[in-house]
Length: 97
Image (cartoon, rainbow, N blue to C red; front, side, top):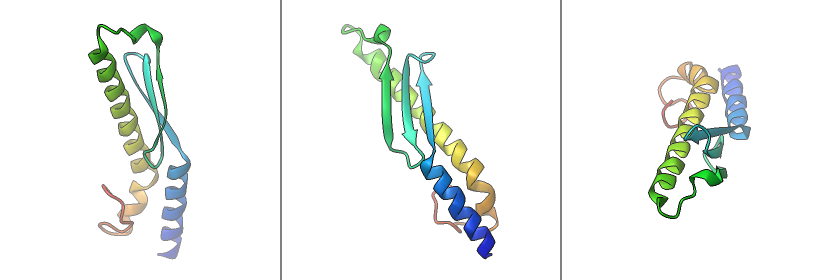
C-alpha cells in the first residue's frame, strides 16, 4: 500500500509540473495550462483579430481552453487513473478519480 501511495504521489507531482496546450481554429488560438489547471499562455494569430467580429475570437479562445482542459484530463487519467484504481473509490481525494 505504501508503494502504491508513493507512486500516486509521484504521478501527482509529475502532473503538477506538466503543461498542456490546446488549440482552436487550426492553431490560430492556443491556450497553455499547467498540470494544476492554471492558464500560463494565450496566443492569438493576428489573422483572427477583426474588430467587426470579436465574437469569433471569443469562441476560438473558449475552444482552445476547452481543448487544453480535455488534454489535461487525459494526462491526469493516464498518470493517476491506473494508480487510483488500487486505492479504492476516492483513494486520492482527486476529482474524477
